[in-house]
Image (cartoon, rainbow, N blue to C red; front, side, top):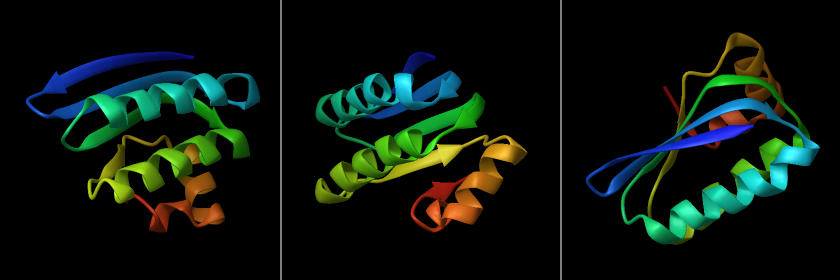
Length: 100
């Protein structure tokens, strides 16, 4: 898994590629939480390069989403591949995040 950061003013885009599976979930969560702490604006997670998300990966997004809501900010997701979007729809996660 790789994460590239792209800042635009106070907003941040995290471009993720690879698999969000159990071995990668904790480092991914730590990166997200660090971004929450370091950024004052909106965070968008670009998942165009992600081809698999496990329940551990979903949990990492949930933890970051809760941290952003507590800070009265928004965590958005974009560019989900069809099979990833299906996982979000089936699990109900597509109702928890803005997805573009």
